[in-house]
Amino acid sequence: MDTELERLSFLVGEALLTRSLMLACAESCTGGWVAEAVTATAGSSSWFERGFVTYSNAAKQELLGVKADTLRRHGAVSEAVVAEMAAGALRRSHAQVALAISGVAGPTGGSPDKPVGTVSFAWVLRGKAPTAETAHFSGDRESVRRQSVVHALQGLLDRLGGASTDIHSTC
Image (tube, rainbow, N blue to C red; front, side):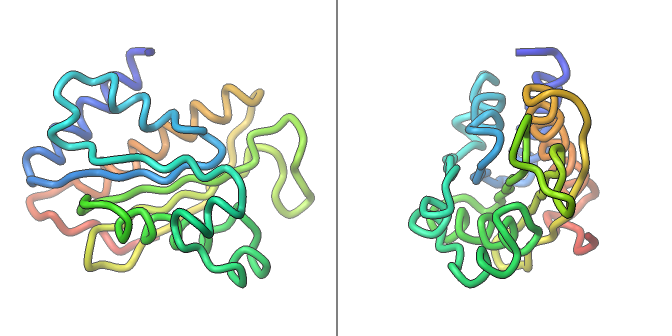
């Protein structure tokens, strides 16, 4: 694992441990890379509860409860879908915090509205509404996926910042 992911994973773990929180993740285009990055950190069993790799739309629906109507109206790469993915990861786990990722890593699969490198993210704290955002990354498939993992972990850190366990409600 690279040093940036090691550092982010360590900091996420420290932030979660300090707040007595467990993390679940729901991943599509990253294929479990977030889960791999955090479980590479010694002691992560104290703060990482589980991960869901839901690459297909059927998996998103079956494992996380994403609504077929949301997928049909917004597409798998959308803030609406990742918000439902994150909420579903909490419902189907014992974690108190979840993150979700869905994107177009390439080299094919993009569209004019969602070109290759478009990735949607969501973060949620149990009992709160998810926050979501979409980012655009450049590079090849591996680069887009890695940047997505970094963005997801950094986004979680940003939302865990401060003295309380409340994830910021800004998008």
